[in-house]
Length: 546
Image (tube, rainbow, N blue to C red; front, side):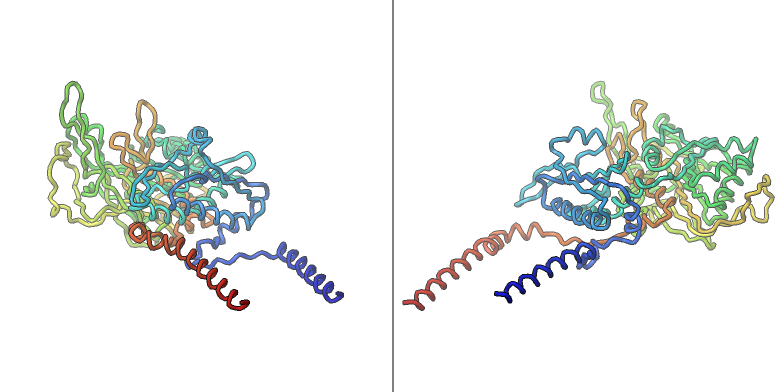
């Protein structure tokens, strides 16, 4: 009896010690081939900063297709990894059905899915969103990518790949005590605010955004430069007025003092409204006096326009029916659809980006690292300027042999040590903060001033991601927001967008054809085994005791 009591006591002490050890030593093992549940060092560093409760609510509960049940499971498992790293993270999974209107008002729009089950197609609506709240701040996260995909399986894979970046980026934004400062340059005929609203309104949610005019360079250049260097990033969106040497020098010194730049430049005057109003227009080079500045950094924007057989559509009047003008959406080869670099975090998994009367970029040999971000298709034609463009040419049948100029570079990332364009040159004015070169700086040059321009409908800005006339969807907004995030990223967050995983998926057609076999294997065969065991057991039992 004493021995039994002793064994029980040892067992209880062992269980207590095991429980105490479990509270202090915690380890999860990621046995997946692609290490999808292993958090990056960047994510771990950010999670350590959470010192107060952070609430994550995921609206992926309820009945929806099996693929998106998988998304629910993958999201939950990933968030449990975050929760395991920091106990201040509190998770909730909610069914959105009883609060759909409220979610839509907060910007969480539902997604309509075409579901194939048992060989039949049906429609399903889900809310693939999550909301994060920390202190008095909150943000929402879309769990489905906007990239064009060929199947729901591909959409699922891209969604799971993006989980770590989406949540870590959102958490980091909520934890930031000091926002980065972005200057929207004006004074040289840049785009009006209403045409940049769709893009900039998203930027302003994460960063401090301010208008900065270069007009003051003429009166007080030194102070203007000092004020500009207080910003982290400058956005130059479609200037149309020539830059003075003093203004160029100000931009140059902003760059050499560490400022990041996002250039959206039109080197050719070609206005879509003029084309629609007159049916014909003259496209000719625009002199912005920026060629030597960009040349010193290693790029040159040419004055040829790019026509591409892979292009966006525009609405064209085709006739009248009664008092109504009839329109038809036709491919307009002057509006190329550029594919993103699949190996760079800025452009991975984004939809094609629409360009309007874009130019082509040449890169020059120097020490700056140049990464292509957006390129045309191979079926392109260079269109020299000055030249006339007629709207009626849209009806002409394209001759493929005329479009043999190959891929054209339309947007490029420059990284490295930028040398001042005014080394060994006369400086327009003297400044005490003059620097001959910048260390480890970044800039993005885009050969189209309208890449960030949203349409306006009834004096209200329209979403940059969609065309109000053709209803086509583009990746312009995602590209520009990723570009801003990359330029301002100093902790390596954007590299999380390069995460690649492989999700094993079910072959639906094969499963449908073989469904009877698998139903039998999973339901009928276990029943047969149980019955066989029961008969065998009874037979042997009777034989033994008879």
